[in-house]
Amino acid sequence: MTAISPAVMDIVSRPPIVFVQGKGAWLTDSQGHTYLDFIQGWAVNTLGHSPRPILDALASQAERLINCSPAFYNDRMIRLSEVLAHHSGLHQVFLANSGAEANEGAIKLARKWGAKHRGGTFEIVTMDHGFHGRTLATMSASGKPQWEALFEPKVSGFVKVPLNDIEAVAAAMTDRTAAVMLEAIQGEAGVFGATDGYLRDLRALTRDRGVLLILDEIQTGIGRTGRMFGFQHAGVTPDIMTLAKGLGGGVPLAALVAQQDACCFDYGDQGGTFCGNPLMAAVGCAVLEQVSEPGFLDRVVRAGRVLTDRLLTLSAKHGCGEVRGRGLLLALDLGRPVAAKVAASALERGLLVNAPRPDSLRFMPALNVTGAEIDRMAEILDSALATGI
Ligand SMILES: *Cc1c(COP(=O)(O)O)cnc(C)c1O
Image (tube, rainbow, N blue to C red; front, top):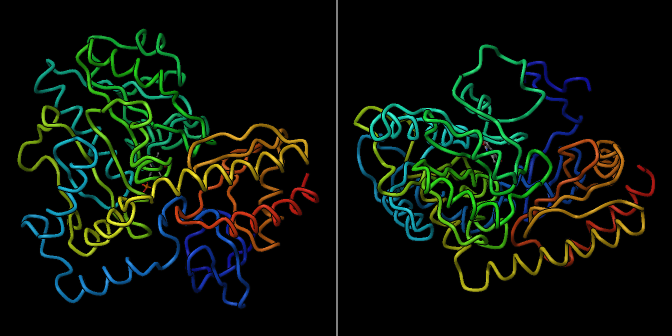
């Protein structure tokens, strides 16, 4: 596509649309066209576009205090850390600004822990097709085949295994292993979940070998799967968890969350100018307040069932494949490599859906999406499938 502005770095093929406004499930472009949004900033806008609780949190916190340096406590940093510790059953929280930054922190923490408590272990076992971010270390931790030859040399110390293969993890562990790191559901890879049984086996194996279990819940955390965190479906608790995307409800906010025994940073090991700033932390508090309201997660589960039903109906009608995922992180397998074409056709019809792989579409609406919005999405997708396949 031709760039709309030569000043914007051309890092991805963007459609020739300029968005100017959003409300709930809907976006408006500079021409006044409206779009139903089932991408929501990449599973980021937990409560939809510009929801009242976030507007109120931003306005009132901006009046009170925006930034006072991460070297001081502020009340919103304390509050958000305590709420996250409470909900997760973990103990300490480091607030950051992006998922990659939180994962860098997790990798550093595991290496520090290995150096301090495990005689200098540093290797981390990660998963094929995993996605952990775009910094050098998190790209190295990721298992994206397209990245293998990029930006060499990689950060070393990552060993890859196939997802849901516990024997492969056991075989990959050596006397250098400090941790195992994975996503609860591989979102960027196309919505492939770690099974509950596999997560339980991993928890037992990592305990048995005395290494850390790190769960990247950046896409699955904060209600996306119908529970506050993805690991709760399996009834296990990781040693370290990372959050971002849905935590900020649209603003840059991330968290590195760890259990007491894993917390071993010395002063100076970790930090960041914007980390824990009260403006973003206030938004995180507002998002968590909404998601932990009684009934909120039940509604996510119900909406996920409705969306699954609609996708299965479309799949049967158009001869597609399975519906994967949990809660409101779902993918439809189209059965053939036409996902980009179908997504482009949907966009022309006023619907934003993502094609994470050539044969699959991904759906990550706001967690408060309505039945009527899901039905409207299914109507538009139906006509896009009719022409796109
Ligand atoms: C999006 C994502 C990241 C990276 O987060 P950024 O905020 O883009 O740095 C890492 N891990 C997972 C599972 C993600 O979905």
